[in-house]
Amino acid sequence: MAVPIAFTDAAISEFCRVTHDDNYIHDGAIMRERYGKLAIVPGMLTFSYAASAAGRLLAYSNRADIYFRALHSGELIVPGFSLPRGDTLESRVSAFRKGEDVLQLDEQRYTRLYTDNGYRAPCFDGVRRCFALEPDELEAFAGIMDREGNDITGFLFSFAQSSSALLSSLSSPESPQEEELHYAVKEAGPGFPVYLSLQLHIPGPIRGAEAHQPIEFVTLGETAGKRDVSFRVRCEQNGAVLYTSSALLRIVPERVIIERVARDIPNSKKK
Image (tube, rainbow, N blue to C red):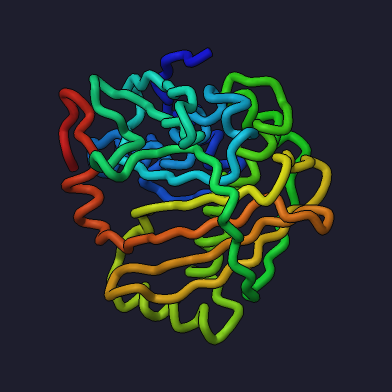
């Protein structure tokens, strides 16, 4: 069932805790006290909540295209999904805020789950990082989703963790290629990596991450423009591939995020 929700600062903070995201634009206290702004909801939180509402449709798909628009703390969204029609086997996943789908950029770029039997995920080598999962993290994630722990919830939890692997690649390089990315991002000036697009491939029956086992990410990144970085990510646990994904990120200047993307708190005084 698709239940409307407005993510509170506390829910955003808890999501960032379990996904290891320390980006301060998601911190309600910092945004309020420094700028008189609302916290920005992580795109992965918006998608995870909407996709969990779609339930088994995710398990019946092997690919997803995902897009984000900025959502802010306290803004009500109504998640929804469409059932597959005809031969396309495509389901649209949405999250409407006052009639605007925040999981859609335009008519051609909207979040969808679908089946593509001819697709094969690319093989690649990269930097392998291992993340230990705390026992309570998966349970806390399921609580934010307002779902019981199951394979779909566990899968979405592992997918949300991929952002921390990408941030680690940019902030703590472990290969010459990552060093190059690190300095390219540094030269772009103070800013935040923002998803422009995200594609997901599920190689077989959906598997949820097990909370008591470490999870591993193999990342391969390259510059795709002055402020753009592309990444391939493979997520593994216990030797099994949970998913592969491709992401295009843009380093958006800090000033632009604060002045143009973040929204003022009603009746607040900017500092």
